[in-house]
Length: 120
Length: 489
Image (cartoon, rainbow over all chains, first blue to last red; front, side, top):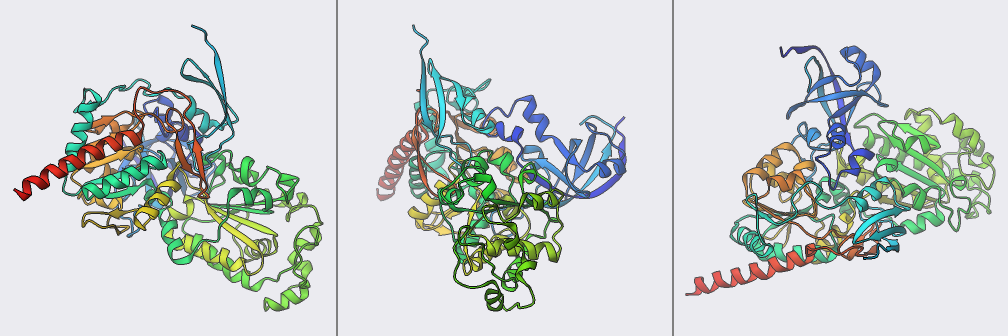
């Protein structure tokens, strides 16, 4: 049964490059390593505790522009901040408004992270 | 047949904006078998076989076709389109970029590079604030203070620190890392932060405020030069310089650098230990940073997409540029963007010298018009305006927001790319090409706008981007001429 996570928190999401993501940035995006990397959100340990999720468990992330499911992992990020590697999965949450610069807000937008009890 | 391994020296890696040109590559039977001196990203770039597990021939509507047929189909789509878009171009040679601009002019297209979703806001900022800059070689030889702001070179440009900015000994920094102070300013503690003397952990959206605060502190903190051996003494005593700065209450001892001894970096080892933990951007920390910036001999500020991709991107960079300009009243300070894609600086240059504008250029009226927000790829695609798209050496399906990708799926898309990607999967026409820097030669621009030649290491059965684009230009020209003759009749 698809149970929605009861607990959720609001965090600021940053997207960015990692070595693994970068290694497959030009080619090889069908690889399992790449897919796993770009579908993993790094969260602060305390945030994960307040959500009640452990590393490797799925979470649902919702922004103003979209939502997607990711695996969460403990990362070296401050409380209230999440990090997602660049990729199609992160772009589900990115908006289309560029503020007349051509650049959408890839870093520093608010999302709601909810615990999920189903596999992503 | 003998399996002789051929060693090629001074190969240029084309992955990131560092464009390292000292890589050694071993080639055997037309395959790259070993790569030395490159980083993990460079090795992955040079070693990966082309089209692994994917298409190896030109495709139209999912069917394998001869190259000529695919070229005809692509040219037909583009010449019939009323409002086409040409996008990408940051992973190909300057020579191919020039032809792409000609094609855009011919079909009245909008042309935009991945620069607009990378350092575009920074480029806008340069237009109204100017850019005090230098080459990376100058930084390597002279810099004693290196600041990375919103950039994580350890993961995005792995050889930047060792080849250009931090550990490599230079003419005026003979001990390399020991002669330099490294400051990292970022929202999260990245791997680069661990290599810094001072790591300033800031909150999201606070870049502009902190840059403005620094600008103010620069005006308030005194100049106190190091000994002549360590740097050029302008002949002004610390006290006098404090007076010049309008702050007579701060004594040189409070400022710091004078007690850290000559021959060391501005932050001593003992002091570096204090900075092991992240510093918060308190007024004291910022005053200290301002002091470091103002009293260095030669400073370099490298800014990454942390400044351009967050809220107020162009204003963040404009303030950083103003800060560096202000610092040049006291010392030599430069600012260089950490460009991501291999030749993204190249397409900025090519577009600028061909059209006068660096990105988001539109030719629909027959002459170039500049319009970030209007003619930039994300805005055009999200508004659903282009009726055909040509993608060259890029993967917008992986790098653009979902609404833009949705429109890409609806319109006929032509992709010129050496590799299989989510974009080739949704394209109407796929034209495989030789990979620049591996099976095609040309020129790349480094992040400091220095052109670097790239070599061909192996032979490819496919033409280069430049050759494919040339063929398309020839075909489109003949189609346009045919249409004109029909109109005249």
